[in-house]
Image (tube, rainbow, N blue to C red; front, side):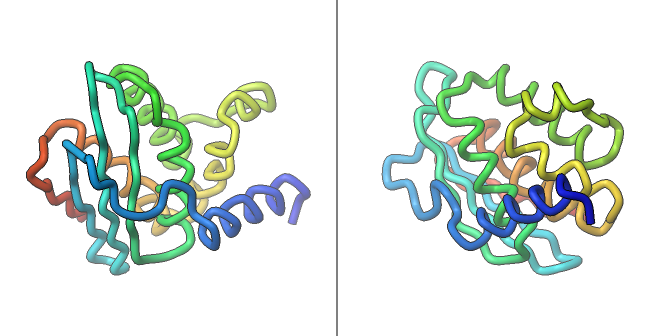
Length: 153
């Protein structure tokens, strides 16, 4: 395993063990729940959106290390962002995990910890694990206080 792969694996394992922004968000005004029936991963994303900007975001999850780490890193990256900025991040991340985007070293640095998911494309069964929190975030942004359910097939 290369040093870079070991670093990426370490980042994912660390976010799984000690997720950031984990737990309910009492003042949430947007919510969604996601489920991946093929593996049993579940995530709930709660947002407080004001003036089209994510003021705060939290999640709860049960599932594999990849889905929990993805949700943790996602929340760190979208907090304070506008809907438009979140859409751009979603597209970058989705391209990364599906293998449609292969960042060079400079682009990987710009992605920060999101780059840890670059290797997911080699394991197609894990693409849904990594992307489910992001699809759930998009559903939460599209909805309101009534939870939306995202079920990946």
